[in-house]
Length: 328
Ligand code: SAM
Ligand code: SF4
Image (tube, rainbow, N blue to C red):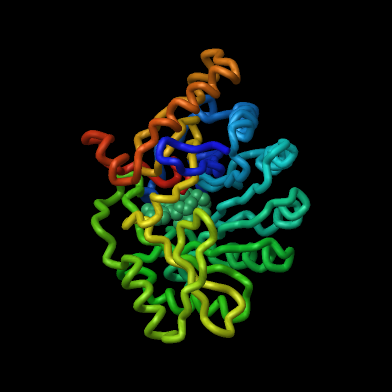
């Protein structure tokens, strides 16, 4: 078992395979996109597989593939197949915006993908366009349908934004009545590629919970799975459940079990740190697996206690990178 210097288990890696995306969600990046990484700046699939193998050897048993939009990277399915063959890896999960995912769902099922988080902030086509700057809602709903038909567990992620989609909180939650999905509302974080200043969100976890409780006074708290970032609830009679992720308020740091690797191979041991190890450069400079292991163990032994401490340690470097270059 891999433990950090605060005694927390580390068993989960979020691997962002690209920074590119086919949407332009304004909470994530500016309208013109980002300054995309060149191909040589990205980790190659071989480098990713090597890092995954080393980290599985240390105790990682669950990997989430994310981005950017993972499905815009060429040959992702081939990479997923190779990843699924790594010994010791128990779960591969995916986070996607669902724009081009629907036709690939049968193959995802065959590859043994354990679950999918689908980003869906609204069920209204016009609002979807306003938020993502692209008219792709029907394609995303096709992905939801395909995942459910193939019995792949789905969670819907919705970032809650004042004046933009708060009227969607109730309709999105209503999906749980007949569908076996988890709908999770996320506080907006400041990772929007410097597009706009992000102060304390007007819709924090308490306000979202109050809104749910007004419509469903019988909303029941249910136990949160180990290492869960969401506070979870059920509505009696509903097939699915609903969760709230206090991402801005950072209520979950005490049990954080995750590492992140960015598309250019920077290791983050906290969402709010500025990157603690440049794995791509270390690999390209010829480090052996055992030397890489030593470097990884060192940074895990010097992990920040929580997001506030990690942010403080950035010493004046503002938190303004895009979530697409971190992986969510
Ligand atoms: N493109 C994929 C997608 O949207 O699902 C995967 C990458 S995206 C960066 C991962 C998750 O981060 C999504 O669920 C998205 O809603 C969330 N996210 C992006 N920017 C955010 C922000 N500023 N605050 C909170 N969540 C954010
Ligand atoms: Fe793309 Fe996901 Fe960021 Fe939206 S949240 S712009 S879909 S990477």
